[in-house]
Image 1 (cartoon, helix red, strand yellow):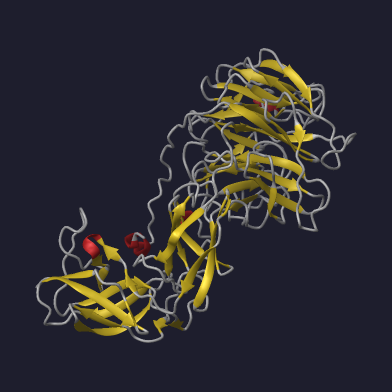
Image 2 (cartoon, helix red, strand yellow):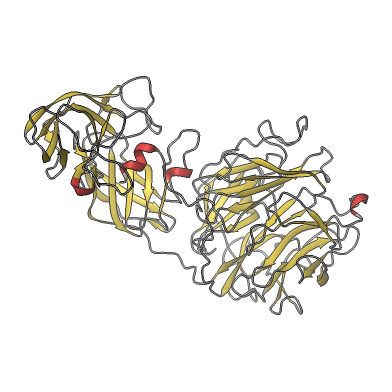
Length: 633
């Protein structure tokens, strides 16, 4: 554990930096959300299979109506869906590219349907955003397990739409090239048409700023994957709502080239653009647009939206075909729901020049049914890149559960522990962006740890190592399980002990020690660019460690240690420097942190210059040897 980060509360996250382009693989799998659950194709849309979802939740009866879908950009085997089981709502996840599904949570809010209403951060893919019906935007920082409604400023005071903490938000989109950046769009007026606003958050939805107001669109927002400065927005009109006269009838789609600050109307035929697909390699645009009382179409622009050509005609008026997608791995492949009805998908392999249409099979009541006749309508469609087989599950190494400071067996309640193994997490991450309203996370990117049946606070995850805070447990044997999006590990045995004192160490096996002003007490040159000075005889130091046992009073679970009251160890430890007893003034948990103990000592006056072994003892247990304190007059 990097204690310097823990002490300062600053974790280095590359927020706002461009994400490296990854080599795309050919996409062959499609998932369609329908009124009777998911359909799946593994041959580019030629054939389809109905996927059944089972759940032990007795409140979720019948078929789930899958309203919206989103694919994890880091691990495309993970696909998420907002669903409606009638009155109960559900958030679903597939960890194997849509073959099987499970219910992650049962939110109280209702998901909207179609494209542009679910978004997932390109790096911190535990962060998911949902645009909801009449309830603004909801944010999950644990992969959809829990949801909160952030406070979003009202761009037009006095407007009565939305909720007390948010205006009415219709669409949401993330910047696919920068982590933490998310846009929302919504209507300013109570009529629900026109007069929209665009806001941006650059810290995962925690704080927001208004980019533009009084716009003539307020429905959806899209970000160009090849250029984050280019955004597109669509209006919230209906099939019969006329365009505002002042726009000369061009109200279906708008474009910004300065990251949402200013907007211009594009000359697309039609009044309602529900979906926009951008071919990153050529900047071609495909838009599903309704022409008011005319037939709906998929339009294509090859010049950034200046001119448009209808490439696919839909037969309904304001009905089906509201989603268009471009395969990122095969840019020539374009997909759309429709045109002949709500149960068809069209595909072009030549950038919209020609199309083929497939009617999905009728729905069945159960797998293996011989004659099926359930009609349905499609709501959304996503592409899952090939090579998205479920990753290997986690495995904890033998003797892989250890004290996070000493790296020895034996873990202590409310103290830091490390788990070593393989496939422990899909990526490297920490809790920086997962602390919500002061609550410390028990899940990061879908990774959680169970210790004796209790959820541990998770601080750091990587493929080979996890750092966690051990929950309150009695001393004795226990079992530990790691769960990731790929599944759960086999349970391993560990022992909870009352005490396992250990100092965190800096380079050279130096004990992490600070003075009362928090300057580092370490030999010169320990850290590049940081002024460090060795301890002097008589110095008052704070030693930093873990495993010093229960405190009085007990620390509150799941949150940082409050200030204003000391949480002292049950008994004072003893500390020796080169076997010379040091005066110990006290030991307590550090306020504003968790599982982190401060031991206040005075360096004995008779300790000579040198690097001397330092040890602590409490409850009859002594910290490991090999940790040093540098002393210099």
